[in-house]
Image 1 (cartoon, rainbow, N blue to C red):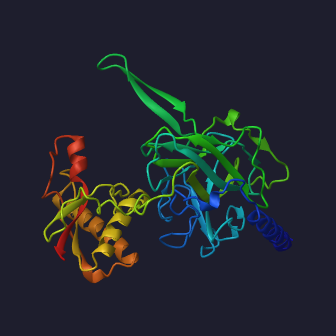
Image 2: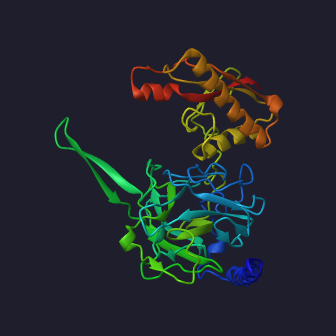
Image 3: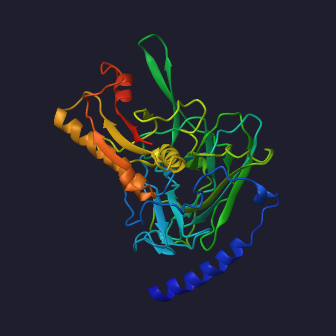
Length: 396
């Protein structure tokens, strides 16, 4: 009986999927540039293997989790748990391509979110349209309405696994303060009276707003308190999962009133190719400013994607350039521990470059531990500057 239900469900999903692909947008969005990289989650490091209750989304290029909630990734190449169209948390064909992500938007406090950096900062007065597609897992208990997108100037994060709150510390005196937490207000949010219930196909979430200027990060999820999320229970669902679980796909951010971009206006890979950089010569050393690892580990986090893409672009622009990837730590910990950690992190960066097509003969790596600080180790800010990865040009 279970196999028959899956077969019927898949046939219905295929029909709905075909219908969803025929949906057209009234504006001429096809001529506009998508400011989101990998909006359909097609670029990934390796095929997903399992749904991890406490994991960090490190598979999908350019996307990451801003909280401790464990967003999931599904792909046609994935394991039984993470496959497409059938997986551990339900079944659905992609809206576009071969993969999609999944997040809880519960009726209680537990939440999951997705975050990425845009291809460029938004400008004051930009008329911005956000669009993404959501599909409710039939394994849910119910559905919510208020999925949306929050645009911020800086990357925001928290260590919670609950509702994502904006926290502000207010000082009453020099040494007395209080922390005020309030819900974020996303610029685009699905109406509270329009519950997202489609389990057989995909439902489009979209909206427009005028940018203040400087926004460069987008976070997707449910930012509303549970009682303000438009949550509704449905007896037709299997009720295996607590609350509402949504597949997310095909994220698009477009500027409706912008002129066509010039050649390098949307070039993600321009960090090391600007006129402000000194000439590239043998012996020059450059710090990779936005490289992030799991705590006390050498696992590269997805926040590092943009800086690494910039380095790849540089190496592609100068095909004869060879570099040494250099890892450094602060002064905390033993000499042997710091040496091992810096070695492993430098190697992890080199391995990433090789996985993206850079010839390994052009690369070497070395860890220097805490032996070459560039700042004081007496302050947290100084120690953060000393914990770094850099590259040195060894030949041109």
